[in-house]
Length: 87
Image 1: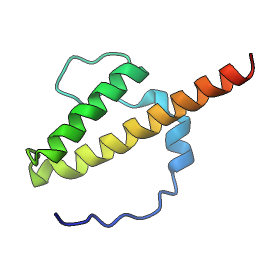
Image 2 (image 1 turned 180 degrees about the vertical axis):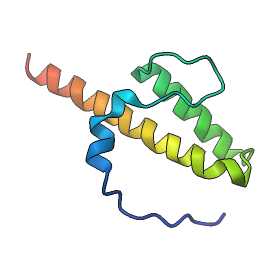
Image 3 (image 1 turned 30 degrees about the horizontal axis):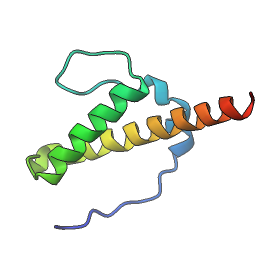
């Protein structure tokens, strides 16, 4: 499998700050994004990528969506950990 070249994301902080505004690009009905739905979508995307059922035309969009979902989930986990530490 060919490796994708990546470059550092200068907009990482902006992406994390706007994590709650990530649009649902799945074929399913649009639902408010929460940790559980983001994680489920991420698992589905990962399975599609592992099965190589994604066309080359869709690959970049799916990888970008997965990146956004990972950032969203990490931010939610960070927020939860912070709230627990404040207790």
